[in-house]
Image (cartoon, rainbow, N blue to C red; front, side):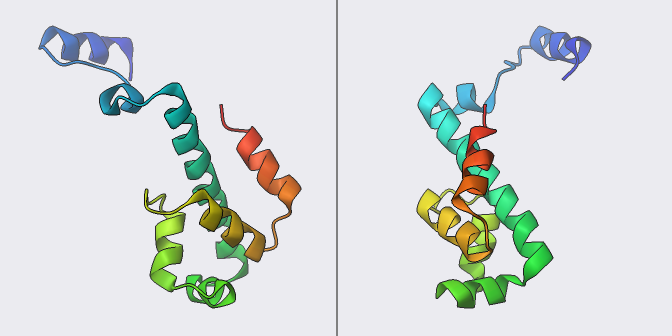
Length: 104
C-alpha cells in the first residue's frame, strides 16, 4: 500500500497493519503459516504440471477435495499432508527443504 493511501485511511480512523497483527499471531505462528502457504503454492504448481487432483488423491489414498484444500492453503491441512503430497508428486526432500528455506 502506498504511503498516501495509508495516511488517508489512518486519518479517517482506520488502523493499518499486517495480517499477523490483526490475528494476534506470534512470530513463530506467522512463520508456520508462511511455511504452509509456500508448500501449498509449490504443491499446486508441481501437481498441475504432472497430474490431476484426482490422480494425486488416488496416489495418496486421499480425496480430491482434500488435495484442493491442500493446494488452497486451508488451515485444516497439516504440514505432514503437504509434505506427503509433495513427495507423491516426485519432489525430493532437498527440494522441499529449499521451499521451506525460502520462507522469511
